[in-house]
Image (cartoon, rainbow, N blue to C red):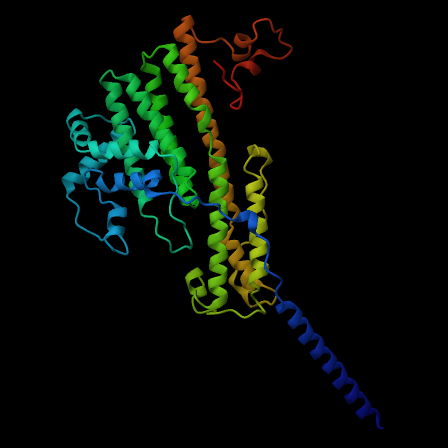
Length: 415
């Protein structure tokens, strides 16, 4: 056989082997893994009757709320509107609403306007009381990114109404009721945080809680409440640190939402165009998308975030993931799955939420400390010189005195 033919045969064999190896590689790359065990990321919901669920009453409170220029998102949803319809707002009503928001934030006051809004909301306040008195507070399940949660905007408006009422009590000499109302705002926010909703629910609850704490701190310098009442208020805040159980459930819900989106993309129910990739893939093939592998990675990301919840800020850890880049989507080996993973479990989102959780704990602790200091002054006629010395009068300092000037936010305040 001539040398040339031998070379051609060898080349053909090499090409065949390379082709076979490439095919085997592609088959391996397109192989998915078994479904992950994500039972620990299930949200355990209760079978709660409507009349025992505070959500029922707080949602109704948002629907009957009277506030200038206000439209209830929940009311529109119940009426069958896909979204809140646009309507021409009365400029006078909008000016009133803007002023009421400033009053809620402690930046303005108008007796006539305050009396008007309080007089129209007797039913609203009664429904808020019913919501807080219920043994349970659980929102409907959030199943996908398309699940509507219109009531959350109503709850922010209810927050402003409660803040206006607290400030009205305070300005009119009913200080005990003012602090009780501020505490109800905190309780409402804490309750929403534990409602087995998604991160949006948790964030709204956090916003409500922080407003209640803010109102309390702003009233504190001028209050004439006695030490006993201030101590009782501080004690009430002990159980209102960041709702870690609620935040854990919120991350579990986010995982379930992401898991459903992966299944929908895999089965063609959801186009990748809805995930920001128009015209690229309708239903990606297994060469670039393995659903089970993607779900496992997502589960690991969410577990890592949940494990960080109880850690101090400096010890928090987050999964590192590259920025999503569309050119990578053409590469074999679950490139589409990796893209969806980054979109669904952004480390920046987790970082932001957990940082806010730490800030929330500091605000609760700081408010308790300020209440304790005010109570101390009411009893002894002065503020404590240093925290540690007052609690440990015989202690000899071995360190610079300024180290003891402020209490650790996690230090237990006992009365």
